[in-house]
Amino acid sequence: MIVDVKPSRVEGVVEAPPSKSYTHRAVALASLSEGKSIVRKPLISRDTQATINASTMLGVEIKHQHCFLEIKGVSRFRCPDNVVDVMNSGTTLRIYTGLSAHVEEGYTVLTGDESIRRRPVGPLLNSLRDLGVECWSTRGTGTAPVVVKGGGVEGGQTSIKGSESSQYVTSLLMTGLRARREVSVTIEDELVSKPYVEATVKMIQVFGGKVDAEGFRRFTVKPQTLHAADFTVPGDFSSAAFIIAAAHLTGSRVTVENLDALMPQADSAILHIAETLGSKVTVKSGRVEVEGGLRNVDVEFKLTDSPDLLPVAAAMAVLNDGVVRLYGVAHARLKESDRISTVATELRKLGVSVKEEPDGLVVEGGGNVDGGVVLDSHGDHRLFMAFTALGLALDKGLKVSGVESADVSYPGFLKDLKKLGARVSLKDG
Image (cartoon, rainbow, N blue to C red; front, side, top):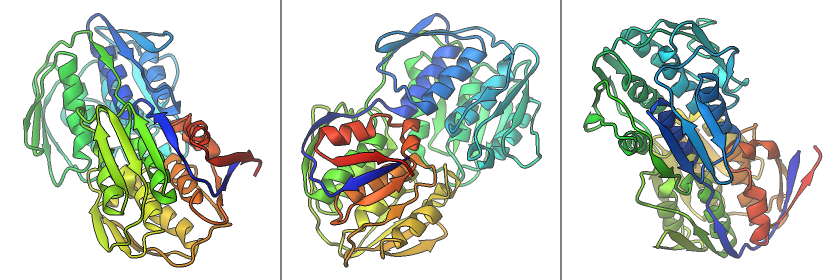
């Protein structure tokens, strides 16, 4: 399916969907906890359903009530009776590769779709081996499918590259909570996506646990028991970024509710990007008000800690009459698609000057960009939503492939755009 995007203004109020990152973490940690946890306002999307399914296959009882999840943790995971299919969720793959070591006995096999089977997990497997876990990639490529032998985690010391994915660190911290002895994780280089690790540490605290951190260079976790919690998932800046971009690009006024800046969220950086490029942004009482506008500037944005903003920031740069450099985000090549390459390829179809760098993009915006073409999302939800937001601001609109990909993180994306007055419709193609 493709979406046919017509030029539109967007006005009104929408509520940000619940955070995908916090839903993943809440479900995984509740699964490790003693007692019955309540996770309120969870995001139910394709990715988070993969995490719910993974926990269920490990013997965790999860009941989906009207607007919350009731999760009864278990002291020892059972061996799944089938392969764990993480679908398109890299977070699920990395977290549950570690947690599967706590299966009482037997082997757990984890795999996913074609995109997942290309994404690296080798460094995590190496670190788990350092901690006494028997695990391997079936193809010997450091990618899924992976096999993990149960029986528990001995513990000890490991080091890992932080420049590839912060999800490795998240997995090791969660896995270390049930190790037989202390787990120490040293970061070998610069840790990317730091706010995601901060979110993991914060969520471990919510469930009564503790992580000792020496800056972002070393993390230590002692064996400990987590306790059930009642947690409300905050709204997601990652998803709200596309609504904010739509307002920015079309010069519209939109309010996004349910955005709590108190919990660490990497993609709250979208507010700085929008302001720098000309929008007026007001934050108050969990609401973000955006009055779109273009400033036309030459500017650089370092996206090391917020790689998921690369597609939407590039889309916002298209109408900026200036040069925008997005850098420090080489790890964006390891996402659902090689986002540096795919974003550059698609924006060039609009006649935009885009230079691809090893760690980012340089977008020379402005000029006569009027749309009227079909852009391929490459099955990547963030490309799909970024290109859709851009199409609203182009005289001839856009057609964007990959409608189904939005289900990964923001199933209500098109519905929310329509609520704001956007002219978007589905077509076969």
